[in-house]
Image (cartoon, rainbow, N blue to C red; front, side):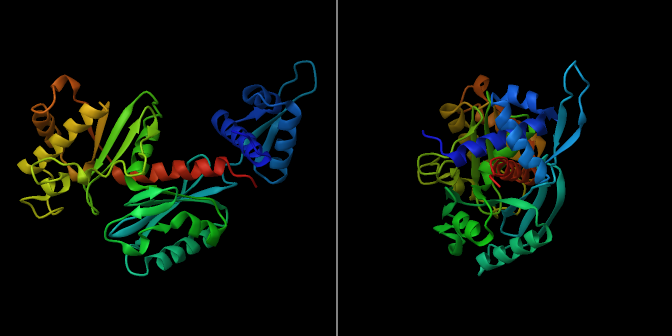
Length: 340
């Protein structure tokens, strides 16, 4: 694929930013050697970034017989990322700098209601006004997303078939990414675990908007050919029941912790399906949805459907934290590639 001048500039800036953040500091020679980019090109970009306050000189290296080299560090507060996720009961947000340091976080009433787009826009506008260094926006939604357009979000008609990414980018003149909630969560937990690219993960959630899953194989999110991967509510399980109906039967949905025989059997069948199809290393549950001891019951019942030696590790995690970390990661990726 041909590279445009804009793409080349973005790649160089991204390389310099990531390297300085990773190393803490570097000289132009070190950057040139690590990135395999000519010294004059590195010098040009560093000069521009220093003028704009994006990088800072932290002094001179010790002399090795020649001219002492300047050492540079990245100003992590030069650009900030806004991560915001939409849920049925509330809208959560976090602002972080380029090193991932949280600068502010909070929540406001849910915007997934009538006139939700207007409420969301006003919410973001207020945050951006108070933090003018915000340089990217990452939005998480409880629905399926195709390149920023929400196309399956049951119960929220005002966002159905809406290009949220395009709308927000035009309104705020900032790069925007829109991601499915479970995809963001599985990106977040992978990031917290150190981006182990040889691992495959499944993140299961049964929460406010019905069940969903985030799938990560060898470090890559599985979105599917039509971006519908992870909509596990539709997985058929019994003669006339899909997973969501099997999970809900006999209980007042979402009013009790997962501990019912029918729920455990439905989850165990779903786990068996995942094992047979992608054989993941780990399946993660939401901590406040399931007790630790119930995982043992699920493993036991799952072994009726799939040989126990193939069962993955069953763990629990803080979904809200993973979700926000995933969105932060996506937002910071936009910043790293940003051309000023």
